Each structure stands twice: as structure tokens, then as C-alpha cells.
Image 1 (cartoon, rainbow, N blue to C red):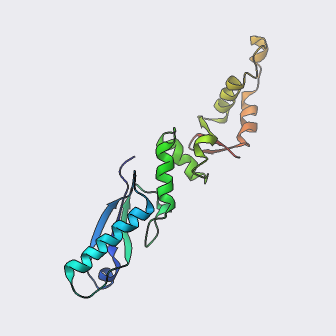
Image 2 (tube, rainbow, N blue to C red):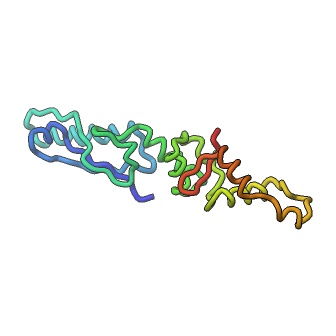
Length: 171
């Protein structure tokens, strides 16, 4: 994952027509509380450096990179972002699969456990299911060749959620 960053303006300066901004890295190892502390330290530094009697204690977001927009508001980054980063780092899934679970609205703590796999279509999903469960083991090869994978795939798809070919259990 590319380094996620967020840039803030000092709000009182911004409203007064001056852009004083700072970019912060908000990825690995940073907690929400630590991030708020960094912002406070930055604003206190501006107040002290300018010595104009203006107390700087508010900020506004002006830019962000490598952070899904659902985690960024007008004034700050959602505390859930930091939970997302931690869950993604400890997950065994690659970022594309993990983000598919996020896009489906799954709770980040459940994404890895609910992941089935990546399949090009529901028929491929059915083939994997049959192989993993041994559903056709013991059947004559000729008889097994008549099995309807397409129908099974459609039925299985009702129990799963899918995003960009990534399948997850619905529970």
C-alpha cells in the first residue's frame, strides 16, 4: 500500500486568507489519538511562531492521498481509518481482496474470516466448492461429468457477496 497522507489547513488562517498547511502520514503504527496530538502540536507551533495573539486550534482537510474517501470528512479523518489500517496489516489477504470486503460493507474484523476466494464467474466458484467439499468423490467419472456446475454456482452465489470477483460469506 502506498503511504496514506492527509493535508490540513489551519482553519483560522485559511478563513483569514492565508494558507498554512501540513501533510501528515497516517498509515502503519499511527493511532487516532497520536494523529490528533500531531495536529495539536503543529497548530501550537504556528501560534507560537507567528506570535500574533491568534490561537490556532481548528483545522480543515485540504487534500488526501491513498485513503478511501469514505474515511475523510471536511474537517478530519474518521477514527475508523486507523482500525482499517491495523486490520489490513494483520490480514492474510492482499489489499485488493481486503478492499473488496470493505467495498461490500463488511466489518473489517470479519473480512479475512469471511473470504472465500477470487473467481471469474459463479461456475468457477462451484468447481472450487465441489473440489473443496469432495461432493463428487466416489462417483464414476462419467456420471460426474454430467454435474451442473452452472446451476450450483448460481445457488451458491445467493449465500455469498461478491465484489470484483472476490467472494465472501454473507454471515
